[in-house]
Length: 398
Ligand SMILES: NC(=O)c1ccc[n+]([C@@H]2O[C@H](COP(=O)([O-])OP(=O)(O)OC[C@H]3O[C@@H](n4cnc5c(N)ncnc54)[C@H](O)[C@@H]3O)[C@@H](O)[C@H]2O)c1
Ligand SMILES: [Zn+2]
Ligand SMILES: [Zn+2]
Image 1 (cartoon, rainbow, N blue to C red):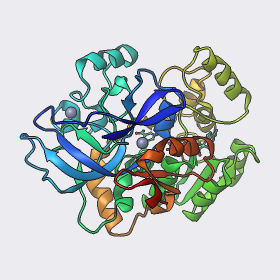
Image 2 (cartoon, protein in one colour):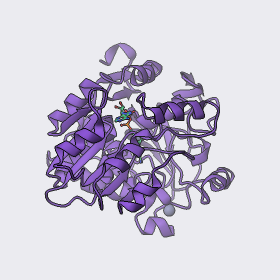
Image 3 (cartoon, helix red, strand yellow):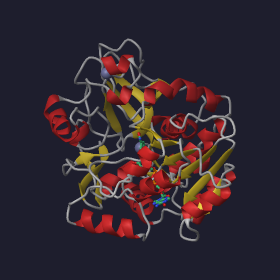
Image 4 (cartoon, rainbow, N blue to C red):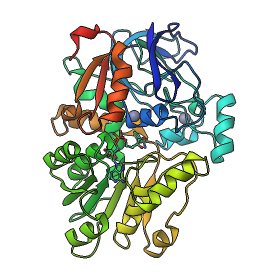
């Protein structure tokens, strides 16, 4: 089959690779109909995440048609359309029982789990297409994918519902939703969201659905800020105004009640702390550039809440721990427990209470995926989301 494979920093290619096959009884094979490129894929593209190997198949946002089902799965049927969560979870361990699916203890094989245990104290949970730290599973930017524990993760989509309405149930919609839930929104709250990429935009949308009174969105790309405005947010362009001063002014001196970091480890901006992070990261003294996170800890009101869906990988410097503690801030973060939210969010989509299709700026064939990565990396203003259609020929997709 054809698949998008990683070969090094900014080098991804579409290659012919062996077809996946059922390995364990609970596996299924899914034929991909739509798959998307995520901000998290850019961390791989930029080689910020260790343990990738040349030839690894990327992609963790995908859906398709069940092509084959292992003998241990009595739930899925061949021919069903499913969206597959990016988190691979067994459904049975201590964590899965608590619906903390992104902490599942059974989905990262021992050889690779040991590696993440050394880094984080506990092994990471398995995920599709996301380096060998998370199990080394082949991803879904391909014609077919093997889905382990396929009786737990995939959610069946009713006939007649187009792929694009539900594709983002795989990751960014539940991620935006959990980011907002982690703010414990109260009536009258003002929520500030750093980053108007897909995760930030869905966090804005979710914050309103969950009852936020006001949402203030921060970014520097005019088009992404316009999308935030269309969702009802007030906006701050951090290249034009001082973010903290603007937030103080907009909130009558208090600061936002809750702040969401939808930026993650590759913060932009030419502030002294960010330049310092760049220099230290270049010589491997730090791994992440948390400028936005520092800024939002300082901007949040006293006693406020901080939610961090943005991905961080390692250690950082100049972290304002004093401000965090002295202001009495609460912090919630984590990879998304996707499976916990699938049914609730599918229902909201089918009731037309959430529409995510506005986000898609580019539709491409799988063969054009390297171009999609380049656009999503280099032309972020207008490239808000790239969807790949592996079953369609290059010329037929626009
Ligand atoms: N927790 C999870 O399970 C999960 C799931 C999906 C994505 N993520 C992470 O969420 C983050 C966002 O993902 P995305 O797909 O929206 O990525 P993206 O790269 O498309 O968007 C990031 C946005 O942040 C903006 N930004 C950069 N520096 C900023 C700053 N200093 N202040 C304000 N905005 C700034 C950028 O201009 C960009 O628009 C990434 O770190 C991604 O890895 C986490
Ligand atoms: Zn993703
Ligand atoms: Zn589990």
